[in-house]
Image (cartoon, rainbow, N blue to C red; front, side):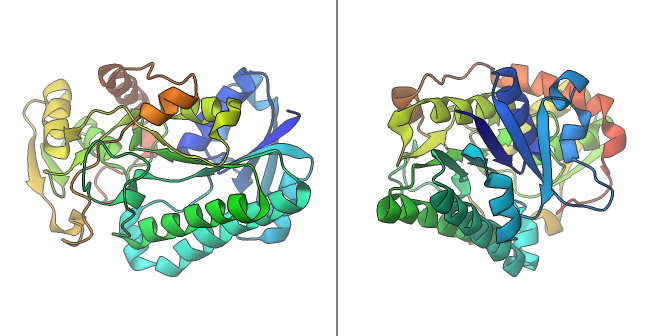
Length: 326
């Protein structure tokens, strides 16, 4: 491979993946969302030795011309750019269609025209909806339980169609719930931790009964890399999961025990998903990724939580614990 492109490189998972690819010796171009401040998201926080190796391209994934320019000269693309917050998708579903579906189409069209050698499209475990059986393998039915998940289902099926119709070398990468340093407070783990670190004793949460299969972000990034390294993954959709689950209530109680045992959980109605939209159980099957690649989980949940708490403790000023982050 010559140069590889990472879209969404300034985001949570994208910044960790960009960092890993540079460390692995790849020539990386990072597609970040254009803004007038010329900020590069979390890439701005990387070490100087890493940043100097990155070719940064500012643009908008919704712009087909900019996407094509960014992909010119790249042999592979890791497509992570997306709108991901589920509550905000209730508010602005059209923006999710434009970003998640049309943005993915822009990448696929450019890859076809430019004869890109590998295309990795990022999916999400939310496409499965509430588990109909566990562990959830890649044959599980899709359920659009939110506008966000519906747009990701659409993007996945577009990617599949380009593989089947045009023989585009696509892999669909499907991480289950990822957590770790640099994650925004719209996700449950940083929401709990930042409230606890701020000193409040009433931790506001939505439903406590849903279960999730949590990946530490460095394991997720390595999953992308290992899928990229294996030609067996072309034309496949592949879960990245630990095959373990924990309820939100159990998670919150453990974090309270570790950070502030005096705190208690209170239900905040605005944080509750509509009843038919709540995904009540996610427990992924990782047999396929372990069979087709060299990936394996390297970080325990306990290690990941410890690193996440430490990061948030040192970066609490970046967050607004008193605000509900959509």
